[in-house]
Amino acid sequence: MSHQIHTYTELRHQIHDDLRIQHPEWILPNGESPMCDSYEARLMELLDAFASRGSNESVAGVATVYDMCVPRLAKT
Image: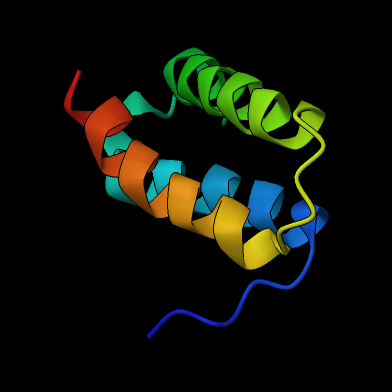
């Protein structure tokens, strides 16, 4: 069960954690994950573009973008 996301920071943490949970094979022995970092950066670009449009929508709207994008990013 996922928790409610209220802030952009919480969303970034959720993205970070979810990518690593979904793809443990991407984690290197030293704990770093260039693949996860790459996907996270791509998603942040999308979210930043969304935010820069001056939308007054809550983080829930951004979280919807996250819900739509993460599964697609992880399939590539």
